[in-house]
Image 1: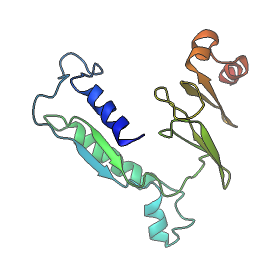
Image 2: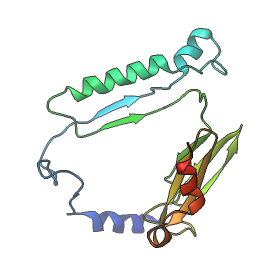
Image 3: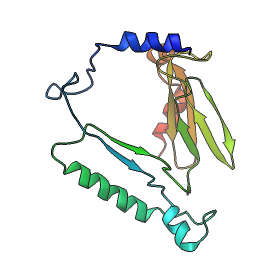
Length: 172
């Protein structure tokens, strides 16, 4: 996107309101607010660091989960509440049992495999930068596998998801 195009996007966005919040919350800028930034929960690093095996030792997340829960509980007690909480930095250090990572932001479908880990990038509901249609990815998780398919919005609303995906949901 060129600077001129970006300027046009920002210009068109001026004066708009967001209807995502309940009525009791403000929809327009009404003065100061605060948000909270957390960084690097990095699940798996604490064990890896203690065992001095940062390449292989991050298979336990218990300590990091407890600390993250503590942070959330502390933030939930604040008054007034922050407008939002954003987590930046490294979310995980090691991935025990993770078979796939799903992401977006590329505005087109993409992906690949890295060391038995599927990396899946889903195209956008909104602005398309590639040849894909506006859509969403349906992900079915069973004890044995993860199956995913990208559906255009038209396809999803007209036909729903395919019967083989529905059948996977019925497995016990």
